[in-house]
Figure 1 (cartoon, rainbow, N blue to C red):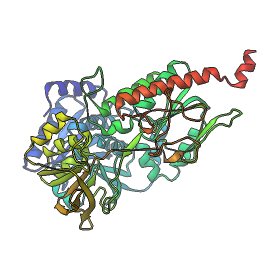
Figure 2: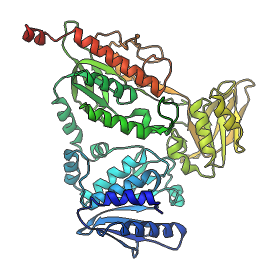
Figure 3: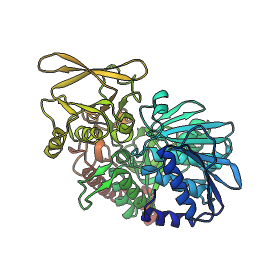
Figure 4: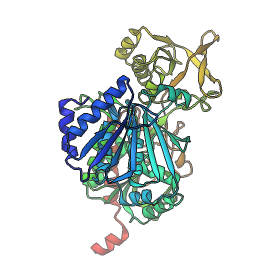
Length: 529
């Protein structure tokens, strides 16, 4: 199961074990069970503190638990093979069970340990899902830190019948005590905020206690990260408040147009940016969503940003880089069947539609790339483009047209998504030239029709927005308000690309630097005199 390179790496990691751990498998006679037995045997051979048993009696087969030998009440169960994107999760589970301390805020660990009540988590993931590892790892940590918490992490491809029976049509899908808890990516702090009524208050108190920043960046995508690096290197105290560090990078796999990098993936690039932010001693406040901006008065003072948890952050200069999100179709059935067949991430949810008929809405690069990727998994793809021609790059169009299980509809307007009350069963598309309507029977709809800027929270701030809700900026990234700059996909910059976002982030950072050195605080001028 593990090639020589993976075995070498895993052996190096297992050297960090402090206590013995046990792997206990529940298996039957199918191929997946044989693979599980092989995997656990290989892991056990790599370190003397790891033992593997194959006498488990759990109903889900194949599955295995990881537990500390000295404390069998703390365990996490993997059902199916945690390979692909989840191999890192497996490694961390082994290390944490073996006493290696997690690199997690100590306050969060204490919150986990203090939770009372019984929490039985079940979470479905796919091996190609790049959002799933965060949830898998958060639940793993909780289960290994609190005996009242259990976590069973289920690879949907292995347990397809259970996926069908429980109506799982999007991952990550998390259940708590048998009922749906959350669909989508969650980090540890978000899970705790749902379970611990005082978590938000504690987080707000911690944020509000921070000293004012010289530069505060709202948003942690490539634009925000670039801005922060530039201002921090100029010597200014810099902070980033991000709802989700990395932004859309976390939802992007293959990146092949970043100059100097022939190929990378969004989560890896996000991780690299996070390391660079840390190396420059930038205060990163992740999972912090801004809800209100109060600009400084004309006579001076601080800009104030209120966060969703009630915290207030202050700064001499702001850089707004809140990015954008997927645009909704806005047709009947879309909201009703979200996560019940309507999806927005082909990489995450594609494997759940193996062998089925699906549609992709959108003929730009994102839509065509999604259709190409999904055609390798699903039974049939219908791509629907509103315009009279596809807008994707020609090389992508040629690839798409070469696929035998793809139908392309142009000048097609999706007017409704239909279903049986529990999941998608089809959609209605109107020919924009003839006016004829056609119902297409299918089981999944992937929406890929562009972006909407995340700027609703600025509606009453005085920041000037375009008719599309984009922040209007000049050549230096300045907005219409002194000391406030903006960058990336949330602005009027023409092209919404990673490299463009980084460039505009650098520009905004330099603009903020120029503003700050020309507008010294009164108290600093007095001290200098």
